[in-house]
Image 1 (cartoon, rainbow, N blue to C red):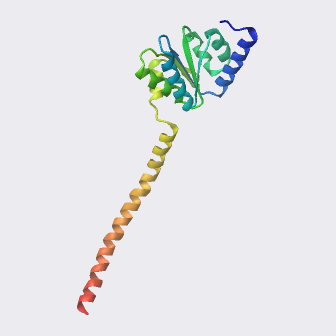
Image 2: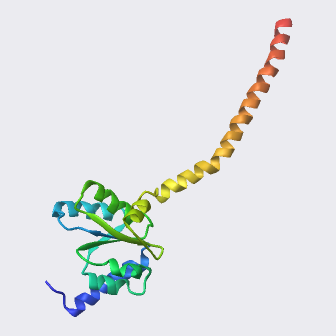
Image 3: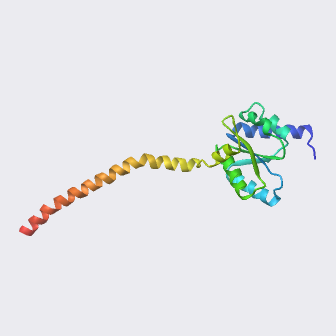
Length: 175
């Protein structure tokens, strides 16, 4: 069913607003995926803050014109699902994880930072830990020197405490 002009303009404006907020775009071919599997993908995407859309490629090209995602306009052919995310790795992570369990979903390309990513680039982006994990690792690195110092000082205090306890025990024995 074709869209009339006002419906097309509405789709273009919606996708343009998604592209304006997003950091990452992932495109994947969905030919042959069952409706149930597509629903699972959409639910997983929604829970991770990823907006998945099946769009006409001409409308998608018009929507991303003038944005950082315009560099992938030549990749927009065939039946594609477009995943936009504000988080840099969320879209790649959702699509790559689903593609591991469902061979019908074929990652075509992606865009991050104004650069087109091939299939391997999307998979590498998906392998980056989430922001929370990276922050936890950074905190661990920052706390490591402090905790080591605390352990060393604790060991020194225990060693001095053992030496001080011995003379006190001798005085008690002498009395």
